[in-house]
Amino acid sequence: MQNHQDKPLINAGGEQGILQAAEALFAEKGFDAVSMSAIAKLANTSKPNIYHHFKNKNELYFAIMEAAVQRATDLLDALEDSPGTIRQRLADFSAGQLENILLHDRSTQLIMREAFSGTSERGRDIAKQMVSKVFSRLVAMVQQGQSKGEFRADIDPSLAAFMIVSTNMFYFQSKPVMEDNPEITFSGDASTFNRIVTDIIFNGLITQGNSAP
Amino acid sequence: MQNHQDKPLINAGGEQGILQAAEALFAEKGFDAVSMSAIAKLANTSKPNIYHHFKNKNELYFAIMEAAVQRATDLLDALEDSPGTIRQRLADFSAGQLENILLHDRSTQLIMREAFSGTSERGRDIAKQMVSKVFSRLVAMVQQGQSKGEFRADIDPSLAAFMIVSTNMFYFQSKPVMEDNPEITFSGDASTFNRIVTDIIFNGLITQGNSAP
DNA sequence: GTCTATATAATGATAGAC
DNA sequence: GTCTATCATTATATAGAC
Image (cartoon, rainbow over all chains, first blue to last red; front, side, top):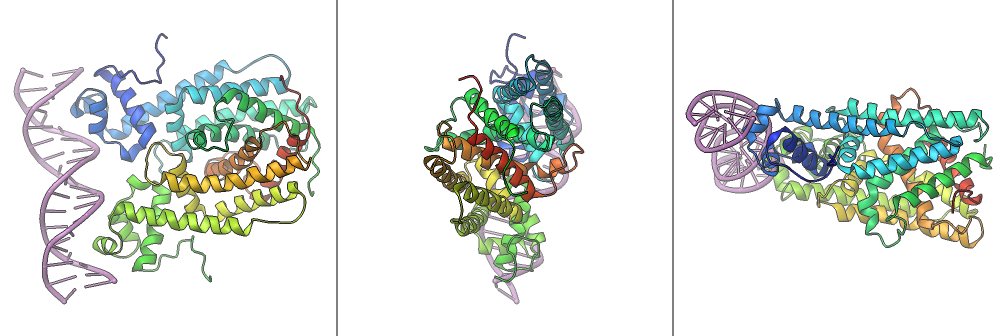
């Protein structure tokens, strides 16, 4: 591929241009706040032309969702296996996942909105399937680490996976807010953020807890 | 107070009933997906009556936001000081905060949507101020823990605070998704979830890291 | 495939009676 | 304070020319 599919560059007319324009707007404002006219305008085309390519607003949205999920899973597949200890593989996977969601920010926002929004019913299942995929891999890795004795065995592996996902997701999600918060100093560099967070979590997963039973 | 202010119980007509109905709908579907007619219907009143009480849709939304923030900060104030070690106080604060957001789920969803959504501009500042408040307290506690030698000093305290907030927020946010995921087993009990998570984080904050420098 | 023009329905908001 | 009736605007979606 010679041009990244997730950044501005709205090439006039055509199905591609419509999809890109729509993705940008939907990601920023959400489904209901975006009108077909606005999409047509940004895509440098007309409303009826959008209806020529897509049956209705819902189907256009669905097409974008599917493309976003496809792209995201493809990139996850590339991260599938890395060498080293389980701890190292987990750290690499986590770092790669954070990198991906930051690179494809619009796709990510779209998917997260659908997955975690109210009962919108729109593309929730497809978004959930995506989240579950990331999650399953992390759970499996943690379990491996436990059976190999790298991590303490008394922790629910899905909880450990959840901690990794949640810090990454929330980092992405809260980035705009945190950036202009004077108390936050780590917000600029995602990879060192991720390194330190996984470091803390893994250390916590090794040391035996001393909280009330 | 004798009836909780955050649960169904839509009492017909009146400013209270309108506010409750609107909060429920806005939290579930978001600003743009909710029509004034829908609010009127749920509040058992008429559209013009809403306009009698509130200047327009935006101001109604704002009134809800402000009430939600007020309620949340009040509850945080009650958690301000608890006895014990810094670690214990932090754990209590974290647990209390998670309890609060789960109890006032509609308010929370509303605030989080505004704080972390795209560039909606609507009530973003007021929501950010709310998030910052929780955050500042956690940062201060972590710093205290560091200066008392309870936690290792080489970790950015805001990063530690961020981890606590993110796991709590993301727990709340992803609850509906995680609940019907067979791999998740911890989703039912928020307080034990919180206890284990803070346990892991604190252990990680004590143990010296062994990742690449 | 792409447009102009338009149908149809729903939206936010108001006038004015009671 | 609350309603019925209605306004102006904008939305999704389509018909039909080129």
